[in-house]
Length: 410
Ligand code: GLV
Ligand code: MN
Ligand code: MN
Image 1 (cartoon, rainbow, N blue to C red):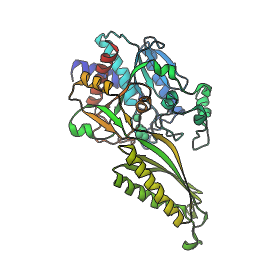
Image 2: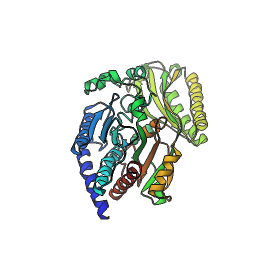
Image 3: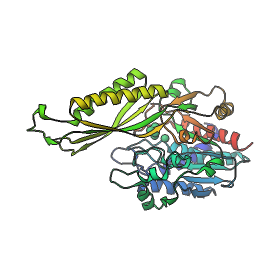
Image 4: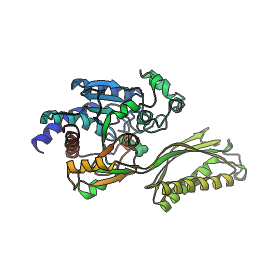
């Protein structure tokens, strides 16, 4: 490691060590940092403390996203970097926090270099990126970009029936002002999100850092299979209306349709009523997450699964309702900014697409946006096993510092 790298490394590791225990479940080793819970509040307090320790101007926007400003927050032409601090259920340490911690460490590195900023710089923590609690991903950035209305956001509920505004209020954020924030987004000249790679492309190519090209279109669909509750011991098989059978066959159909379309499709969350070992369920509710390289393939896989589910439901006497809960079209990151990143980092820097969703993908509709990926040696993500080598974390910080210097200091 060079002197530069060890300085950036020290700043990174100090922050990482502080944030590491927050919201970590001792049993699973995974993170449970769900939006507007105590763990999320602790992450937010950490973010604010980092901003204040650096003399940055701290603010929470109307949608609960956090901002730390070097320079005038109301000035035009800002360069913004950051990511999110919330997690999926039992998530890894890096998905989100790597980008936020690297942003503060990159600023420390630029100050060490004596960089002269000609544009305002902001570091952000976007709220509720994973959607683990209210079912919709990227709530903070969607609200800001006008892709989620206040009315739609007010209708979101968690598994205990607590609404999003109630949760915000309980965590000390006034929900009344949530909604599109075009003036704020109009002041952003570029948003760059650094993120752990959620695949092994960089590991296979032997590179520490890559540049994002595109995000696959993706969405979430809720499948409600309504059957008839009855006794598991006394109800003859021929007399049953068992929604679990239609659900199980639909899971297999999802795999088949995804293989046919070269896509991915996952039922990763399920709820069953009444959820008794000795009762045939009255309702099986499963959530489908489907993604593909292009919209046509995604339509093909989603339609194929829906059709198959309808046939299985009919066969078992089940009433089926399918609801699309979210959808994000394909995102092609702006070519000019992407090329600028390649110029700064070197033309040999790999450019790669991803099937994972990000706030950068949501903001790309309104703001010039780019992403950097940092090598993940196993490719595992959304799991406690997610990992990044220490040297690669530092390489990410230095790459981000170079990019921010190139964008905000010329
Ligand atoms: C977020 O990480 C997603 O891709 O669902
Ligand atoms: Mn994620
Ligand atoms: Mn993420």
